[in-house]
Image (cartoon, rainbow, N blue to C red; front, side):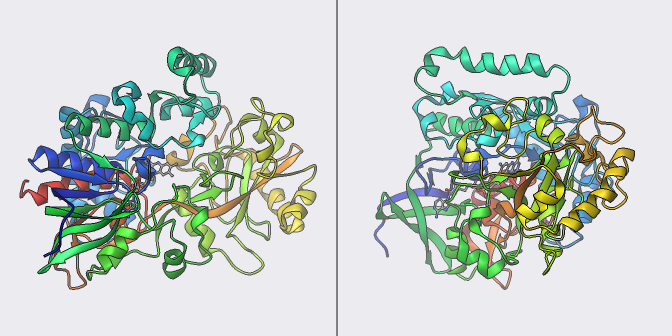
Length: 563
Ligand code: FAD
């Protein structure tokens, strides 16, 4: 029998929102819990994300005047996943989601609000809703974390005003197109930041935490209350199995081997394999590059590989939570283009200068379209986002703040290579290696359609979902405007992701399964370490962290035989 360096009841690998939820529930059910995290900061991609969770039938809907039912939610998920997921996880998710959120709100610092106007990504599909299912974390005061705040992964620069001030999702939406009250709101965000004066003198980091930072901080704070430790710089290398049961793990802590016994179970919440180039080359459509990802560089599939070594089965390995991303010189991860494509005055084109997708489509669908349409002479991996001077002036785009706030003449040096700019469409096309005649033909067709508000080719702006991030001041279609005003701009768009979704095959209890569909005793997988229950699709905002948390919670319950 191996010599253990430490022992616990439940070992949780990774420190994203799902892992921390599993740790919290396992503690509350009476276990001694240990969380280990590979990097020197906790929170993973969850901490830099929007922190939204998609919870059908959540407990806030009725008070907001909305309606939902388990039947509708299940019908909707089945429809958008094309009946590919047939293992009961969909029912389990819908059944337990509400309870998990209610439990966290009653027993921890975690708080959510439902977004009444944020539509499912396919609201027109049967069972789809025009709002209420996506929930955002409420802001969290970092002072409650004390010293531990320094170990929380920092938010993405793209979610901060002027690169430093935090905003909620609702605030960001108002500021995006300078909606009603935007000026007062800007002052409010500035005030919130600068009034923390004592702290301002020490750090530029905002202590008013929002989005994924608020969610992870609230979970971490709740674990601090419970004395549950997170060991940083500690990565899983191998799982230890005895007589068909996982009983612990071999870790590397601060560069040295560390063997930890887990008497009741191991929960793998170590993210996907998006930062592992070999795995991307093996499993993904090509080309696929780890540095196109919008995630921190630590999710390299370690936990997936460790479980595969014990005979675990995998599924959906060719798929990701795809998102179009752009490269910013000097940044460790790319920036996802979630909303700017939706705004009026831009198009996405291939190397032949042709559009190939509804630019306002859900981010995962954009990258599927990039791969499906990629062919010689009409390359769409990468493709180009093209916009005109009016778009540049009014709206942010990736790393670019709107021109009214940061004109080209005042751009920092590292952004000079972020885009191409030319006085005519033909010249712009030549700069980026796109067929000039093709691009001109595309605009000859697109511009009159944009004027009329009807995109006959790809239906941009037809769906309620498209319009959520449109500019209400642009009519008749808040997602369409012609590209007419020089200079013209182009930003390269890569086939990126916000995490992979292929991983270990799990059952309704988040138990890891072998090829023959028997569970490996003592082993659980959640979040992007597990194959997604959402198939190839993305039903609504929060479809990755929602299941990560719900199945993290369920894993802890199964370990303790609780319902
Ligand atoms: P993570 O949160 O990445 O956590 C995994 C952790 O495991 C990491 O800290 C990693 O360092 C650690 N780890 C890796 N290997 C090991 C090892 N061998 N040993 C120990 N630890 C290890 N999704 C939503 O649902 N809602 C949103 O609002 C949303 N917004 C997003 C916004 C952005 C900008 C991005 C980039 C993503 C967004 N996503 C969102 C996607 C979502 O953030 C991720 O899919 C999700 O957080 C993944 O959770 P996870 O627990 O699987 O992994």
